[in-house]
Image 1 (tube, one colour):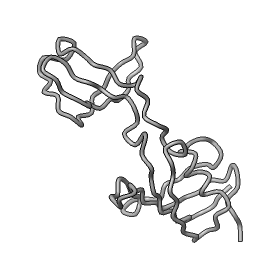
Image 2 (cartoon, one colour; image 1 turned 45 degrees about the vertical axis):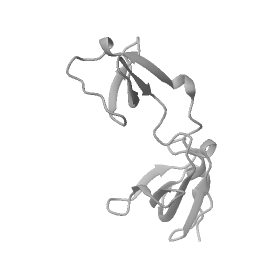
Image 3 (tube, one colour; image 1 turned 30 degrees about the horizontal axis):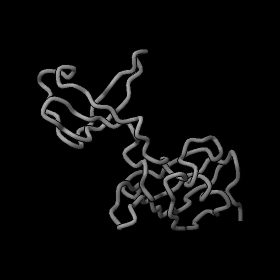
Image 4 (cartoon, helix red, strand yellow; image 1 turned 180 degrees about the vertical axis):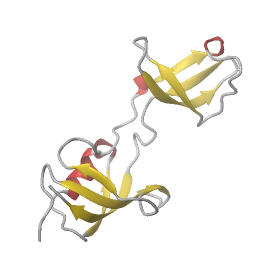
Amino acid sequence: MTKVKDNDKVKVHYTGKFTDGQVFDSSLQREPLEFEVGKGQMIPGFEKAVMGMEKGEKKEITLTPDEAYGEKRKELTQEISNDQLPEDLQPKIGMQLQSRTPEGKEFRVTVADVKDDSIVIDANHPLAGKELVFEIELVEIGS
């Protein structure tokens, strides 16, 4: 049987869960996820787990934050005064907002805290700092 190696195009079905079993994402109700191995398109631990798999093989892996989305970085949180927010914004914890760098690049932030005269935003990936469990099934290997 052919095993996955660098530069192979693969299709996988996956289910991503937290260690308590709560599912945060799954491809089972849609098309399999397609990516090219070794191109950095996936988180490092996921890509490493797919290496060497054969078509039809299934496995479950647990990834530490450094193998997934990294640790939460304190420097990616910032307190913003309410006078810098749009007047019609009613911020709530967990709300996703678009922000912009001084150079004009847009990125997504999450409202981490709402205070009387400010909010705290977090630009970390929502899964940063978390241990993640993935069930993976290799559906197809191409080249």
